[in-house]
Length: 460
Image (cartoon, rainbow, N blue to C red; front, side, top):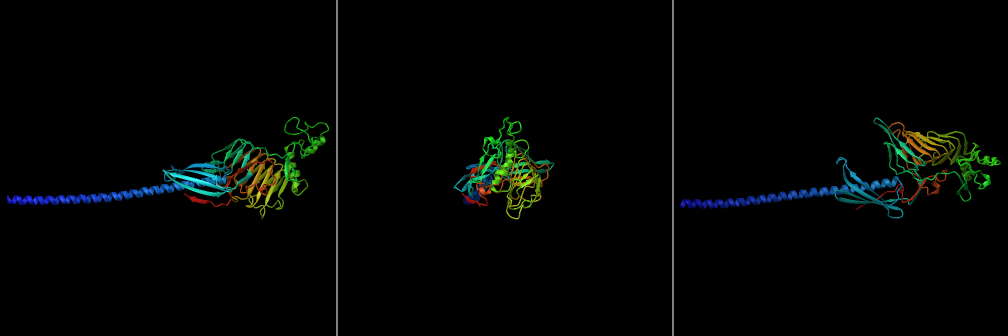
């Protein structure tokens, strides 16, 4: 009995010790679980915070991308403020899928500053940036590429070889724009626009420096009904069918080029050799600025001091990828026929203006030089550009515009049509000499950013 009592007592002590050990083990396990939970919680929190930081940073980059896209729009095309753009943020790591969006608005914050406010969003996280730029409050310039008729643009492809037509200029036409897959236009495209037809039936008043419209077929602009003949049969010209007995001398006086009819070409000739020549430019027949017959010009062929010349015939301009003069210079060449020009890029600080009663044809390659100078063109007929080359400035054609690279030679035969760098025609000293009255222009407020203006960035 006594042994049984001793065993029972020892068994009870062991049970107490085992219970204590279990409690210690359970407590230890609870501590381990707690530590593990804290570690996991901290890790998840860090991962979540890193994810939020990454998404916030991505949202910021999306906002920056929107601001830069707005800058590109303001700097390359005509824009009436305010203007809003939206877009998607794509990444290569996501396989090109949309991972975020941006919304950006530009508006005039002051009389000479444009404010760009952009908000980026990535998976619910948002970020904002604002940028301020100087802008030109008044804009007057020729339309970068315009035509009363259709505009046709073609690049070419053969196998893996491609040549592109690229335009960062606005396209404005009274007709339609036709282009294929190898044409890249980053400017605006405006079709079926009511573009006013340029006219040469204008008279210049040297005393006031102003122009007034002539009566059609009154070539010299006398205003005396007895000094010109009207278009009786309404065929858009005055010819022998309209001449009445006793009007032969009047007809001969108005038929400037003696081709048997009085038409717009007579007005064209008189516009330059008589009306514009009242500014003492030497354009009349027999003067230093007047040329008869087909002419070929190269760099230096037109003297630096001669601002404008008149050619009664066709004009060929060769190797124009060189400076026209050693100093900054503007030239205007007027032709009663067609003008053909190779590689239309003159000296970096020069400007060339071409006016043709017929067509203006150009062609070149991009091998022989980078973008230079400005060129302003008016073709009373067609403007045709073949092969490659680069031009900066304004181009207008009365009839058609046709641009074709013809051959798929990459880089060499790309045709680049750029907006000019001398755009502020509200300064009358910068308006090209000799352009016809009613040459298509763009006028707008709050449009294009001022040149060489550093942006002012603000992160919200």
